[in-house]
Amino acid sequence: MRRVGIVLLGLCMGAPLLAQQAGAPWGYEGKEGPLNWGKLDPAYKACASGKEQSPIDIRGAHPNRKLQPIEFHYISGTMALVNNGHTIQITPPAGSYIVVDGVRYDLVQFHFHHPGEEAVKGALPDMSLHLVHKSADGRIVVVAVRLNEGNPNAVLAALWQHLPKTVGATDKLTEEMNPAGLLPADRAYWTYEGSLTAPPCTEGVRWLIFKQPVELSRSQLRSFATLYKVNSRLIQATRGRKIQASE
Ligand SMILES: [Zn+2]
Image 1: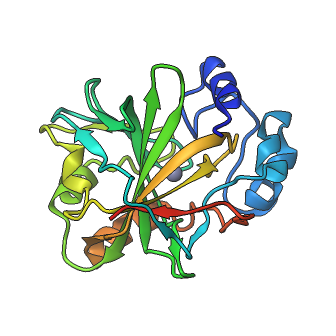
Image 2: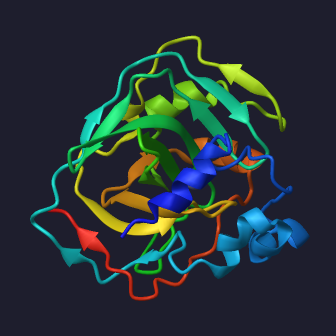
Image 3: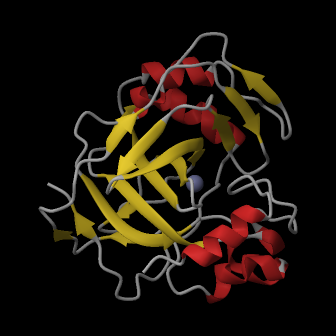
């Protein structure tokens, strides 16, 4: 079962997801790094003691024909970018949402990790894109896209022109973009129950991870890596959780 109560608590504190809580400072190295997150703030307890943490290594997935395709209802708009000290986070205008098992989840924000966080049979992608969604009753669904070096990505090219270079800096797209342009053509996915991959590591998060990765060029990869050399959490124990695969 999803731990809806815990998720609601996190959201009721008025915290925008993932990175901008009022909690203790945290990071990706040294004393504030992932191995110490659980000790930095009582609110981050789940990072150390949680039993269903993310990311995990995707292997041994069970095919499930009953899993429905994710319905994407993303709209174009101008986007606001912020360098929040943990990632580059993009806030789309209201109105983009997905439907999963008949429930609407609004797209709240999306952001990137380098290297990527979703391992598949032990192999990490070069980067990850996480599209964070929330239902009216506070449930969280994250759609993950694995990004690997290859051809230039046209949608990222537009975004990368506005990467805020310093922590706290913001920028805004001058032209409209549609986040659907960042999704792979093949929408088959893996799904499992996990957590946010950054403090407060809240559990009860449903993950939907596309099987097909998306490409970006080496220079696009480097542009992000210049800002965030490492902003990803290590693989967490699966602890018997079931990973299902859509067809
Ligand atoms: Zn993330």
